[in-house]
Image 1 (spheres, rainbow, N blue to C red):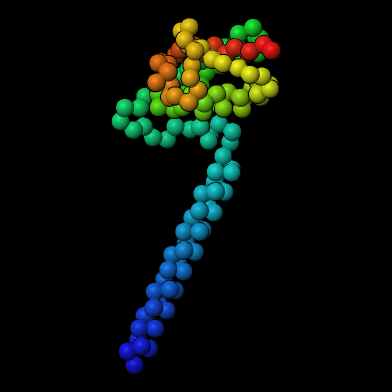
Image 2 (image 1 turned 180 degrees about the vertical axis):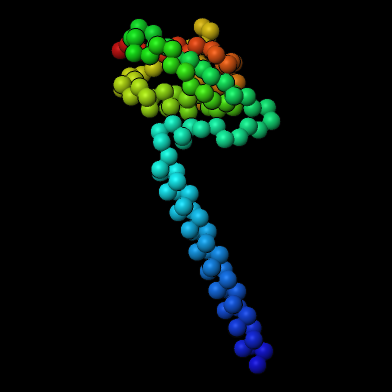
Length: 133
């Protein structure tokens, strides 16, 4: 008799867990479809600021080629530079085929550091250079 009660209890728990799992899967699918429906610029939307983070706008200018003239991106000081570079290439895909580097105030930017770690400030102009082969 005790085993039947335990078995029923376990079956009830399994059913509850299955319901929770289905609910979570529905939430995941809903979030994924929302993400896929976002516009090109929405995926870069700043939705929250943590202590120590600052919203800033940085401007890009291409040197030698006049394709980019004062192109601004809104970002946070804690964003990796490589992510802003990726966003830049989304709008200027022709630069993907070149080897490039960036400078701010005459200093070369390290791609895998944050904007803050690269000493990039609000309204700084970032120069994009193409490495000639």
